[in-house]
Image (cartoon, rainbow over all chains, first blue to last red; front, top):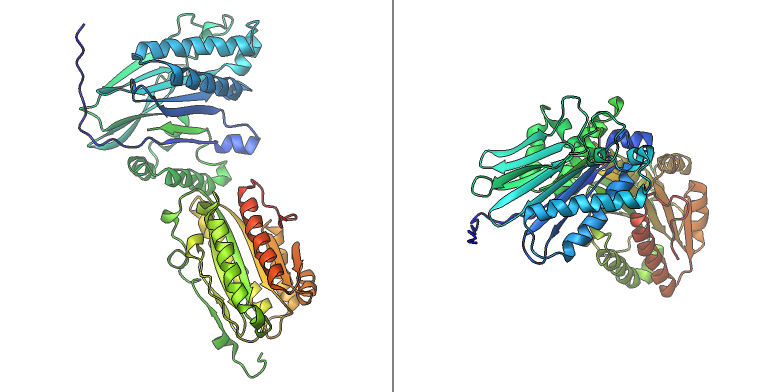
Length: 251
Length: 229
């Protein structure tokens, strides 16, 4: 087999990982139900993996399942050898099953709904391209010479994400035992950077402040982004805040 | 109202209140979304003369303790010197703290409290509007009673009450016994009395720096148990 390796001459930017509780969650005493991590892999293949889990607010304790998944998945990736992206996605499916067996060993649908309803987003940076796999919904952040753009992904017609948990909950609508990850692939020669975000980020879409938010992302201004979210929530406090859902992004 | 033939328009100079962002640390220079404001009012009255050298040493030690802590990026300090006049600096990063010390004459404690409270609340509101999460400590170091303020103790107490109601930590370090009655009359929730010796002065600022760091780490302000000993 012949491998072609392409090296990008673009300047490597540091990766930013931010997770902020939504104003609705803060008001009603609900935990931040997003989880995730962003790590460089010692073997360099891929260079970096970022993962975001977005717990469903209908899943009363989805942050527990999401948090356990993040921790176990991160540990497995750190100990793994060089991987192609499909292997990473397979590990994610295995980790989900592991977490499910730990939290809901009897497959009780009520408990599965309570603990295991969360979106899984995986972003892997290789030498020549970024690969993304999503099971659920969220957004992809593109950075190119035109600036930063944010696009929603996997929003279904019924506005109910296709959670991996639906493989195991036969009684629910939208059940699909063949639910799988949707994959995306972006060549580095066309993009300066690619990121992922939970759907809470999409609250900024179409707002007058959207360009300010995009500039902050472009400049990797982590405290600036956090202050921006706080500021909009404070200015809209009479309406219960602006970013009502949890906001998590990795780019 | 005039006391001792002095004009209060000349005596009370308050820096950095008209242009909040210009005189304090600009929001864009903050390294975190959380900030802990620390107001430190320092008595420079003539009764502190025997301890001038020691004060310089202890202010430097106080600064170094906080600079070397993990909380340093989150702490902004405004130093206010009070003697014959009030001189309040802007809220700056802790490594910019001026550790010089000089002794003058009187003790304008009440006016310092009033001016310092106004400055603190104004900057806090401004930071919150910029999306910064803010906690604050209002601390006074003094060795005695007020001698020359334009305002009365009753008015100053109202300002301390306002700070307490907003869950801002109010802390008074009394260097010797004379300051204790002032601290209690003014309604400071946290009062630390130390003896009038160099070693006690060291204990005072050591406690103050540890308490500032501990309060910064805490999710909720230690409004009633600030002093960490």
